[in-house]
Image (cartoon, rainbow over all chains, first blue to last red; front, side):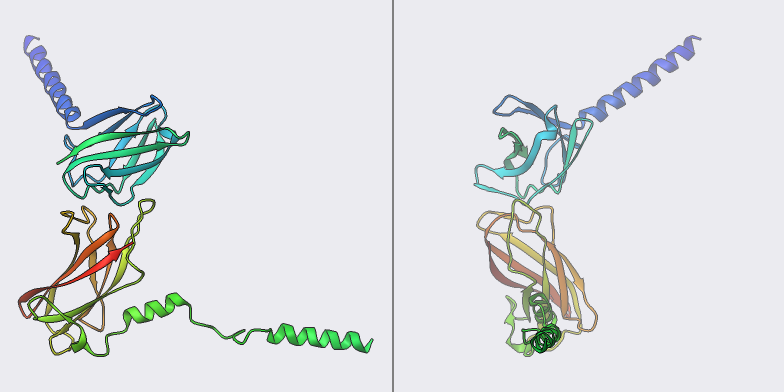
Amino acid sequence: MKQYLKTNFFAALGIFVGLQGATAKAAEFSMSTRGGKVLTLETAADQVTQKTTDFVICGETVDAITKVKLWMPEHGHGSSAVQLGATSEGCRVVTKVNFTMRGLWEVRIELNDGDAGAFELDVE
Amino acid sequence: MFGLRISVVVLFLFGVFGCGKNNGTPTPRQNDAVADGLMLAPQDGAALQPSDLRRWRAEVRWAESPRFSDEEILPMTGVIFIRTVDGHVPANLTGVELIADMPQHGHGTGNNLPVVHATEGDAGRLTFDNLIFTMQGQWRIRVVATINGREDVWTTWVDVR
């Protein structure tokens, strides 16, 4: 019995550590729009890099997003257009993401009521 | 009554022949002309611009003027012609790449890379697609290719609007 409990304990610990590792892999960013709406941005990997091609934006008002634009404020330029997916469970997938160089990028969000905001990402 | 008959005949003839010179005759659309021009091999291959080390010659033709939009994804397409120095179709052409970048800004097209495809009938005629510019301005376009084991780069510049 003791051996059985011990085995189960370590198995559960292993699963817990594994899950922690899996959840720790994602990078998550949060921001408030000018109007105070909170949105989060999540990527699959723990860092945003030039290889990042998609991310997920979530929040109560995610359905109101009309435009997502990548912008590099220090350089005064953006990138090619991204593709904004449909809303599913309070989140929208953004694909065709193309950070053309390393540095500080903004992911600018526009909402259908004129509100707007930006995530700030340090792209590696 | 006679006047009515005349009117009917006139209307009938007008309907059949119409008022335009080309009615019923297919006229080439502009796109067809562009496509034809794209695919036609250069008449004088020796007149193409030489590569940087003058090992071969090349030309890039665009299906439409290179442009950028941050509202929609615009993959540019076109044709690359490569000829030997004396203007012939290269017999031993390998490793053709198309690279677009902005040296003054220190970036290229990022994770969207143009794709080059061989075409049948002319070893020195290749098509490219998925060239997506990420901003307006002066872009450097380079064709990297190897003929008979000798690599060289051909460079041109385009003003992306």
